Length: 206
Image 1 (cartoon, one colour):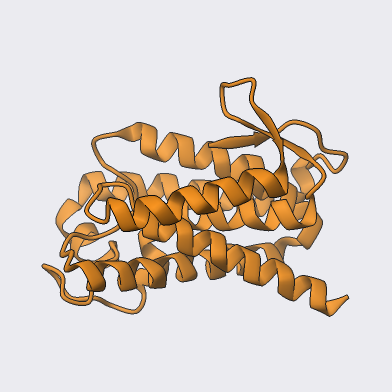
Image 2 (image 1 turned 135 degrees about the vertical axis):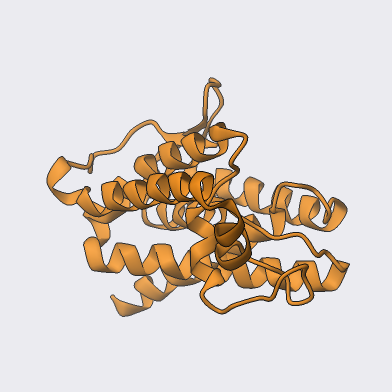
């Protein structure tokens, strides 16, 4: 995980309400999964095209709001990252566009993961917001490329573009080398690519 170190466009509470809304939905979804684990698992997780349960189109978005029921750190770290990058982009892009970017990155991550699971014959589902968060990181890298980012809890500092390039290459290698890992590297890579495409689209609008 990464965090911003220097940033002249620090978010304010008034423009981060949509990020708090997303965090609240994730928290409610976690509580719902504890209450109704069977329904949430079958209907809202992202199931492979040939998975144990049927794939449904809405799962390309709903999977990003549910997290590991046992390892609560999965939820907490993702929500920390959502606040870190989401609040910055919500101010820079505006609420509506930010939510569109978040949804687009989540769907792109899910589609990539579906392709990976189909290619490697994986039947287990995918959950978590990580793919969308990797997409936000890619957008931050292109819109704030000269800003410094650091690996969380370490003194290592790199320019945003450099760090994202390293992460993208790492996720590509891991997705192909460890396709059956419990970590959805395919979703991470798909989120990054989706974020890059969206960010370049914003550049073309100028």
